[in-house]
Image (cartoon, rainbow, N blue to C red; front, side, top):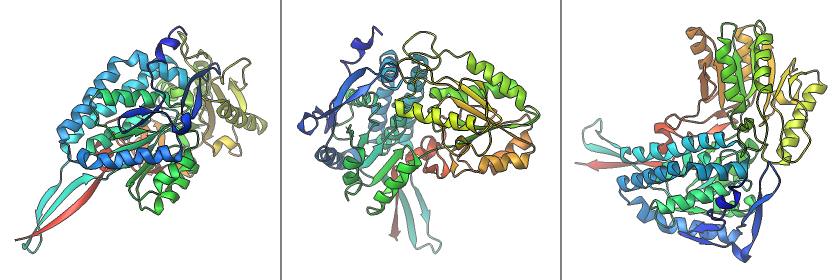
Length: 485
């Protein structure tokens, strides 16, 4: 832990508004804790309603000049920020691990992933294009152009404190939109660090404004209802997302939502079990299981369920749990006590209803919000974790008898973010993928997130896409001009 004091002083803890670091109204602050120890890492500015309005004022004031900035110039700022982030990976990884808990290796993986959104959208900035056509009657020329949506509000979650920001900020910068960003109160330091980097990379004052607050709904709702705001984007729970959508209705805001998940992980009888177990470890244990894309229900053909479960339990038991800053640690703590209590209660409920424990399953003693990698078999559908997002290192295994049952089980949820399937039969894989009610499908792989691909879900998992060619469209309006000759 010797790097703690070296890492934190260089990280801003104030609000970032109109290109300046400033205290919150009344110099109010709130603490940020290390989930591995419970120690306070820093006190961060606790914004008021007035602070939130000031941030939106800055974004609105900066919008005209930023929209008129050359696409190449906008792209070059993103590219410079990508280079700075990459150069300072070790510094940021320590900061991220300290405030979120994931092992340093996973923090570095997130940094590589998150920074890539800046590189990807730096290249998309110069590819924004419209079209020209002739009206069917020949009398009019039809011009279609793309223009920035305008000032945006971005509310990001705690689980990927860099990447969930860069995949919103990147396309907004590329498109010519200004922003107010509200990072999660549990992990605000990474976003404050990023704001400092973007300023260093040349982002003009007011284009990006960061507001940290312990009173999210109180401070954000006035911004959402302000008629000058033109877009709202949120990553988080479906419960909160529904409320934000309601609030956005008065202003008829452009809205994109990346909400909860209940990802099925299907293993068919012809699957390569080595690939399936490898994929399961990625899909379940990435980010300590605290990911909306995490496999939530393992649906395994009855003929291979025992073997798959045994191998998965062996791999899970071999993982080292501990403080993410320590060498050799595979699994860090959950982000807070509330989250661990939820995970433990879901496991206890499943056990009470007949589930068998092959690995983990008990809250360990000691400090920090740790929970062991857990595998459950014989899990009944009456268990709460059949319906609820676990957001922790717990793998419940259910069985199916044929493809129709597997597809029906996979789709038996209000959520539809991602699904994973393992089969060596290409025809089966494509047929099942087409019938799964999700926005993304991983075939013979346990990770789908990629900056060059459109990320997003259907049903209660939200709407809109982040990443890929589609990602920048969320920040662009289409204007049609009819020109009579």
